[in-house]
Length: 139
Ligand SMILES: Nc1ncnc2c1ncn2[C@@H]1O[C@H](COP(=O)(O)OP(=O)(O)OP(=O)(O)O)[C@@H](O)[C@H]1O
Ligand SMILES: [Mg+2]
Image 1 (cartoon, rainbow, N blue to C red):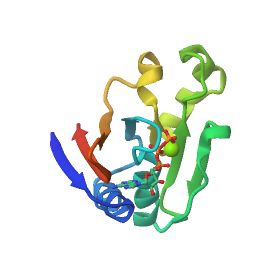
Image 2: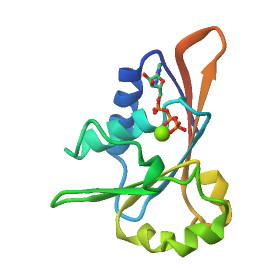
Image 3: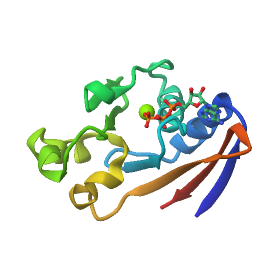
Image 4: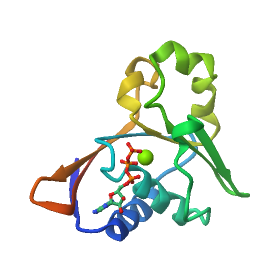
């Protein structure tokens, strides 16, 4: 378990970029935290590490966006709008797990559809400082 503090959007991206160096195909990362807590900014850092887009579109309307190059495929999910696990199965969600690296915003909402092993990252805001985030990494 690792607890990190970020004081800016850019710091969160850097934390994501550094974290990404230990990821490999088949890894699933669940990103938990309130709206605006930094889950997508963190994901941008992960994509930067792999030389993929640095400014990504929020997948909120797509459920999943795919980014790939010759070395890696990243699937970026936002499952906030899914009703339950059944909707995740219906879009073939599980089939993504083995085929690349999955980052799943709001993944705790589909807990039962997740593989037995995944990395869980929790983002918390601070009431007194709008740019401060606590980032807890559990794997
Ligand atoms: N330390 C910080 N880390 C990350 N984002 C920050 C930080 N401080 C301020 N922000 C701002 O907070 C917002 C984070 O947005 P982001 O889209 O990453 O949130 P999110 O967790 O993905 O939300 P959602 O659940 O709506 O998808 C951005 O507007 C960003 O500029
Ligand atoms: Mg987001």
